[in-house]
Length: 333
Image (spheres, rainbow, N blue to C red):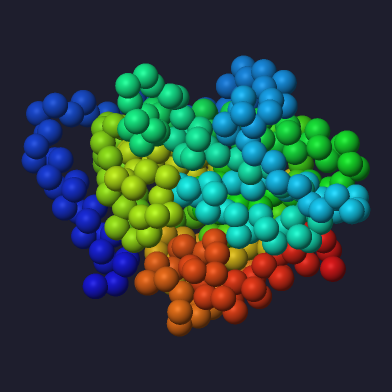
């Protein structure tokens, strides 16, 4: 069975089960209630976070870790690198290595519920504590973290007098773009987006039916387990945050995000339709955005086309071509 149909069947069965099991306990929302509960622009929320917390050392701020270009020359840029949903942040290391070797300093952001960014609880192991934090995430919380990551990049870029880059995968690309569009003080000079979750196939919206159950964990069927921050699955709270971010971005796309951008996408991506990305680029006159059509090698992992963060997921030759194109794009070569 193809991955797309596996996902549709999975969600159909889960939703049917929940409808039969929890029907009496649901609180029905009418259209007015649903509109009233829609997420609002997060600038006020972001401003609640102290800017100086972005400048803490990695040991003090588990969301941020720095990787520096060789010290033999001035950095050619400073990049904010953001991972995807339930992806281990350290799995972005293949991307980061290409960037640092090319002379780019990297600030790797770990969103709450991923990597070491979780609340440690006495008597609870790291996996359980991480999942507990993952079940409590929100769009506003993640946006705060992305803003703090940008502040750290901005401080470093000013110090070394270098351009600022966004290099992000899937959910990370959505959050980075939404922050860019939202905040007048945020600016990236160039961007590289890998399978950006800024448009989704319609069937993925089946998950919205589970929004009243934020702590429910949905198993991950396609991604390799060793790539997941939380191998048991992804909580509905995280999907809710994804959908809130998507709705906010779609209503706040701003011409300022029309900077030189390279978008990597596989036409067979299970979540992101290529045609929809093309329409977004056309409708919002993003004439500085360029699509790179990924053609995975035969040796690439399994059948999961959305996964494109290293040679294992794309094939060695294709990954080398992708990263060569990415670094040339960022360095304007």
